[in-house]
Image 1 (cartoon, protein in one colour):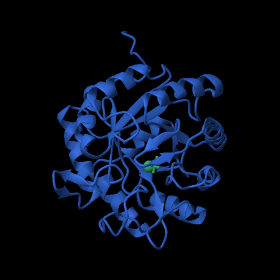
Image 2: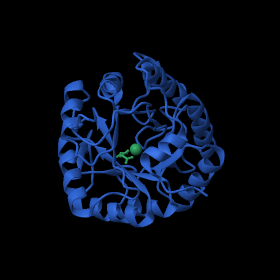
Image 3: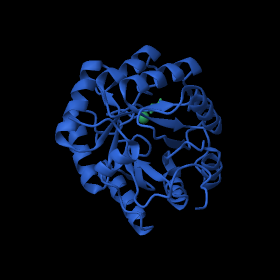
Length: 286
Ligand code: KMH
Ligand code: ZN
């Protein structure tokens, strides 16, 4: 068998992750952004129907502001588990203003998966802080709590840091290594096919699957390049608020439907949540 540049076997199906909310857009600016628990659950259900298998979750408080309140996170995980079969991934990135200790505490809500960003990056006019000590603490906590990390790679330096992390601390819980290229953030790598190919070629051999998401107008080029390179997709209103020029997204399901159409077109139809659990080797449920 021809050896792949990393252990990611070309996938027969496409894992579609929906990131419906994020921490950056305000409800005032975008009333259709799902910010309440009821809106999040309804969104997750519709997106599952449209082809999503995993949900990347940021939550909001009663004023629709980003929060990492633990009780709310626990309730959110429970509601998504009861009312969908999606793999539940909690963001440990939160908002750029969230203290590192609050971001570590996210794992107390016992999600299936958590995001884990591999380094500090300029984030528009802000700085998204991920010092090495925090990355290693969060990684070791994820191993201890049996939570599968998704390594968020905003830049080529983050790919290099992933080599360093795996070399020093070994494989994640479950033994699989799933990474997500977050492209087109002002301050990170550009959302281009060239940058995607460079990042994929630099991934550690231990990587067993990867997805990509392009922020803003880079959404489509990144999705097409990811599919062409055999990767998976992340889409959602965390990353893009328009479905076409001047046409606001009304519901996250529109972005999932479009991703599912592209995946089907390249004959790698959307993966069901059960297959995603196998792929990621998440902790057995219930
Ligand atoms: N909101 C960004 C500062 C993650 O979810 O882990 C970080 C972010 C990454 O969204
Ligand atoms: Zn996020």
